[in-house]
Length: 577
Image 1 (tube, rainbow, N blue to C red):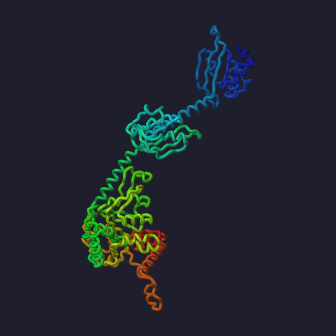
Image 2: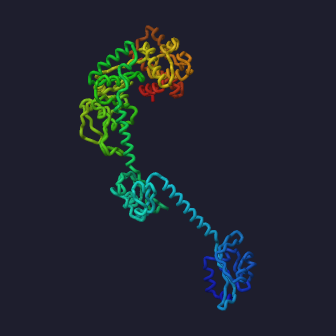
């Protein structure tokens, strides 16, 4: 029989086209059929295998065992040199159950192993991906290229109230209560879609949805959507607004009795402020950083008897892009991300009260013009609205800048300046009222004792002399800073601040060469006022300190004997930032 098969050219061609090895032996174990794939896998040419014993060609073969036992061995692994094959061996019996031979079919098992490993890796990757998606707090929905739901996570179910049975294998629109499907937009445009507002689920939860296409080899396979719950954001925004309203509703913290000092200069300034408090006029507080401008603003409001709130706004602390909305309020949809409710601004919040605009010199020209209109018309227009709203707000503004100089340099509106300068009050520097230092120090130490749990009763005469010899460029704020540092350096049992407790205080910088200049009687007197010469000298000293410290502002502040905040204020004032 095997001779006949071997002699048939058509059957031989058929065997050679099989994608697996085929070896057939007669009842004696002599190879009669040996196809091309068998030659490749066993690395033996067919003409060298045919007519030979199977044991000679495949030493570890089990075909003789199959011939002897006449039993089949299916899907068995066998190692042929460096190759692992998967083989099945079957006996060949005639109609009378007589043994004619055996046949083995086999193929390279490494490809099966590679495919099995890929399948395993894919399963592991899918499991990992599902674990990541299921653990995220954002709701996620995935559809295929036809817009049919194929995956959601638990956060999605919690947000929408829809189960897997209600979403999977359903159209992408099944969860939408109001709005258009982001998935369908992504599938039609084949690009991401972000920030789409809609309502989802039976409870019509407000959400923002971001969607992105799933591309595999530049072929669109579906869309993934991330759904952000807006109800929690609304709740937090409402809580924040409540907190802001509570903070704004707090009473003013200071009154005129809290302004410490008996010097003629401070008493004169307090008297000016008292007179201003009895009128609705706008007050312009001027003075260097740390002199107590906010303290005066609180005191003026407290003495004014106005029933409304005292609202403080630092014009330099709020980004210009937000300051207009904070001051004037806005209506729904006024800008991207704005609240869906009407939001009152500081002008309305201070209705019947006082609005304190600190660092007014930092306002942009645009907001200066809008503030001028408020002062003139006593009305505001919310951002995004056109209806004017009347406000009865008393304005107190403060600055440490020379606004007249700012006007000359084109940074401040002259018409606004004269609207603000109805009641100008200049708060003197500490250097000009050094006789108040003992009284101020006692007052500040009382506050420090409460905060630090100490019992400091005073300052030694020599330490007080040192404090009064210093020029205090940082004013009362710097004095408080020095006393706090001294308190920290004291032993717990010490009750009096002595010279060794004080931090290093740089002596006032001298006007180098001033005496020599004044001694030159024939030299013309400079065509400048004393304040102008002082500003020019101060600018030169700031530049010199920065050069000496290689631009280090903290070291420059230490060299000049001023606080880092005072240095920043002065650098800003002279345009040295």
